Image 1 (cartoon, one colour):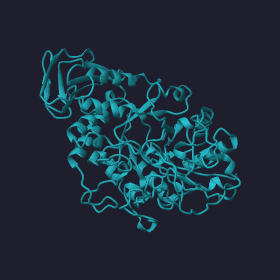
Image 2: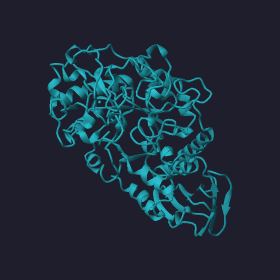
Image 3: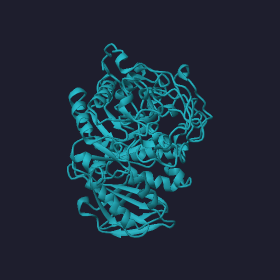
Image 4: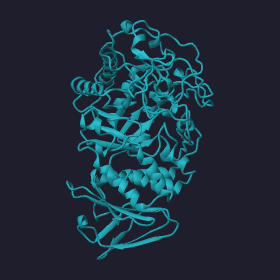
Length: 530
């Protein structure tokens, strides 16, 4: 990702079609430079890259749908599901920095886990060939299992499967109505990548060993990783050719863009032009600008360089609120400010990620407060991004524990077979996602605070286009909270159904009681389905 963290993140990145699929929010694996490495295999040079035969046509795309309405699920491929033990090179599930065996085939086999949850879009970590060595800067052997340490943009890493596996995953996802975003890295290569020594490419990078890293965002060697000189036309073309070819051949619906602020604006403008002309006019771009929010993302939105960016403030603001830290009115002001994003562009908000300590971990395992955070995530505007396993209580932890295996409980799905799951929490997520998908007010409506003092927080979401309106009530306190207030004007009635808990409210005023550490989501009678 962006600025180094105290964890060993790993900011994971002519006949020349080179493809890389590397991801972000990878701070957790890039936040260190290597102390030592094992020898790595030498991939083919760019000039020696082999042009592959034409790929078979992918399955039909998902029917047009607003990205504002999507539910995005983020998976580290290596940590989700192992579908083919034959590709398990250097796998050690007991080692926190090693490969654990998850692959594209395993993810494809478990797509029903996502579709039954209600997920509508899937973001996967980069799958291009990563370095064949480990680094030790974190104090233990740390491998490129996350996909952000590219060594050959021409190849798919065999530890994740084959190109056919990638296409099959995308096709099967599309058949379930799930879009797919591929994580790609343009900013950097992996530690000691062959691009540093190949005569054709070694001048394309800045590196700490050569003392050529700069201090500005674009010239910085993030976490000590070799930094591509993307401002040079030859380098930009090489990287763009590679990534866009992967997009065309795999049939993915968009890219998640890593380390956006470490690549200059002319590159992103050319990237946008080429994705629209060479892949699809609707190809979606979700960017990671480290620390981004509605205001700081403006330069990329006003220049139409990407469609959406991550709101890094959501996790901290939401966890502070549910823990009782800070005034309710201040949190309401923050949620309202998210609506000031550049018109036509979107924020994506998360509670946990691979680059920051997980929400449940930060809440010290307090599931009741985590449930309140999940309610808030799925009732506010933007693209809610669920980090794999948090919906079943995977605790996350600080790096590298925030990249632990997907828990599968009694199911024999490696590498997380036998790891406990909170199925009641998953049922809550299913319910919340169902409510969100039924009510456009929750994904793209306006925000109005109705009660913003004390521990009981009420706000109204209203979508003018559809007329849909929803009231959300959160009690973060330890005592039941009661409230009486006039029905809000956009409500257009004097009755409501509790979409989350069941029951009906009716009367000349809104009279509501919310139990401690609980929530209610109110819809107008008969509005349970879109």
